Amino acid sequence: MKVLCDTHVHSVNSFDGESTVREICNAALEKGISAVTITDHMEAPEIRLGDRSVYGNAVKQITQSVKDVESLAPEFDGRLRLFKGMELGEPMHMPKLTRKAMEIADFDFVLASVHNLKDMEDFYYIEYDKSNTDKLLAMYFEELLDTAENADFDSLAHLTYPLRYVCEKSDLKVDLDKYIGAIDSIFKVLIKRDKALEINTSGLFKKIAVTMPDINLVRRFRELGGKYITLGSDAHNCKDLAQGIEQGVELAKVCGFDYFTVFKNRKPEMVEIWF
Image 1 (cartoon, rainbow, N blue to C red):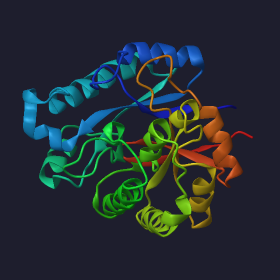
Image 2: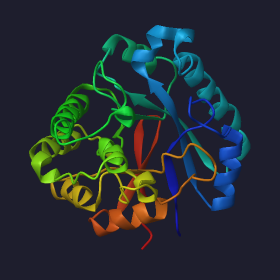
Image 3: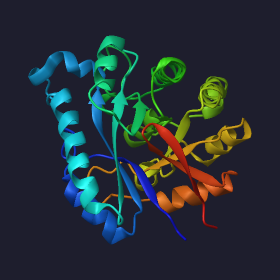
């Protein structure tokens, strides 16, 4: 039986989310999705700003996100598995605040990500050219390695996140072979720590036109011994919910995976790929 699960979804409890958790659940049923994990943004360094953050009060947002999931999960039980998670951004920038974020709830799933380097703006806002791109990417993979080694999480999100914006904002051609040593180091740490790698399908519908990471890197993760793969659309509204997830499952299979993974109570559950 075809089983599709989306483990990277944002609701209105993210500053950039557009749909309520109930709307997401109803859309999942309409699309034939078996499980959804709500992973609203928690940029840990923002906790220090509280209500003064331009993105909203992070603690209040995640607390509400968890409440929404907990209140709706029984209603949809038997039709949709609904998990409470968060996308934990920049966990190594302020470890004390990261620990505070982890104490907010008993999450099913924690997705670690890096959207910006320390004391720098999100990669979304950077202008890319030959003078800065290689350096920024080298620094990014170095921070991802630190995250993989030291953060408390379940899956590492959108490994090649900066490339989304390099592609959108420039005509630069990035040769990832330059960074394969650093990427291999990240993969080996994930494998050693029994962590998952996310196949983020949002890139399929952007100028980058591939998953993040792409098929070559997912295959490399498998070759090195990677066991756990999660699939996330990175949807911020009902329309994009589960977009590309089936393609992500097919990619995982091509790369040698017979299972993908969902997390409940921070424990991996293996879902067999149906073909």
